[in-house]
Image 1 (cartoon, rainbow, N blue to C red):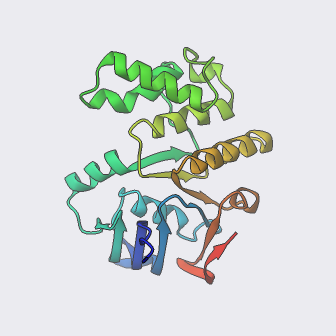
Image 2: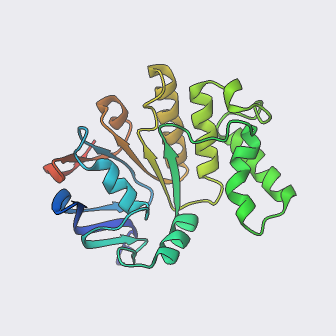
Length: 234
């Protein structure tokens, strides 16, 4: 019996990105190719200026490549309209950032509810889902706390819960432990491992080898190119 082919959540083919600064062209990514299977936990590693954040923005449909092709769930997204890209972002991508990006005056629950307020979801259902997700990330007793009443690790857990509200196909995390101490950082990576075990595809951008060791595969970038023979099994 023929084995069913695993779906590629992300596929990047010979992708390049160049920015224009006046009359100068500055290449940031050059001929990048790789794929991420459904349910994988992958890290993108590289020093500052290697192009890893730019790569994440393109995978997350926040930016477009200058050349090459990008596919999300086997749908070509590299030449979609802005409106179509926004639709893909809303349905398929969950973002977690280093700086949390929480609303200071809103409770943890209200922060998690925020993405759902732009959809046709009742207040009752928003509340139920936000509470369930905060319990899932270990903050069931912090629903009413504001960001200034939470630790950095707890704020990042709120941000992760918010990123999960639309059940995205892929979770993208840009230096998610960058503002945390080592203990809180380890706890956040353990939470990502748990989410991955539940089937979530996760991509973490980091320059920290200790963070990357939590992932199954490493994509190493240097000067805009994949180095070290391509994708490395961890």
